[in-house]
Image (cartoon, rainbow, N blue to C red; front, side, top):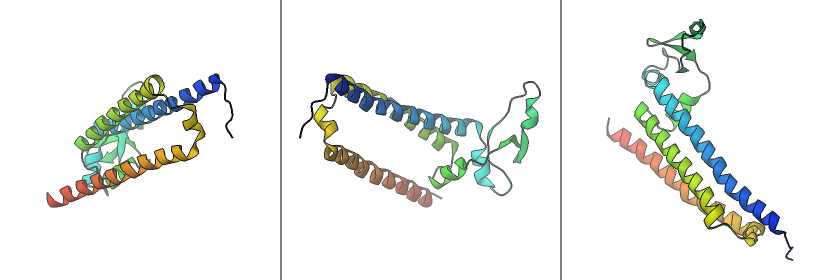
Length: 170
């Protein structure tokens, strides 16, 4: 049974659909900033070289109005605030072992943020999905499953190749 949905609802559905791409863009932008600041301001490589004596620190408090007292010695000649967020462990588990890899990941996340912005614009202005697509749950599920089945194995293979490259080049 087909229901008649007013045009204003159809426009709202199109706006919500394209807004999802904008939200993904913001998430990728946040991730890019996290990786960039981790590469630029942290002691990630030093912490990896001697994790038992050098604590993870990704932030240094600048000497403004006596606030530098918050900086502590985390080892390895680095003064900063010791972090316990687990970012260093997540990066190491992902196979990231240098600042260059953090910078490259930040650039990749920025590219994906731009791609998501373009996808949101494209799906709103050029190729907005029809109302029938929103009402057909099976087609939406197939769309998400196709994306998941495409990207997850690709990313898994990429990580495996990174590990193999690292193991063979030591």
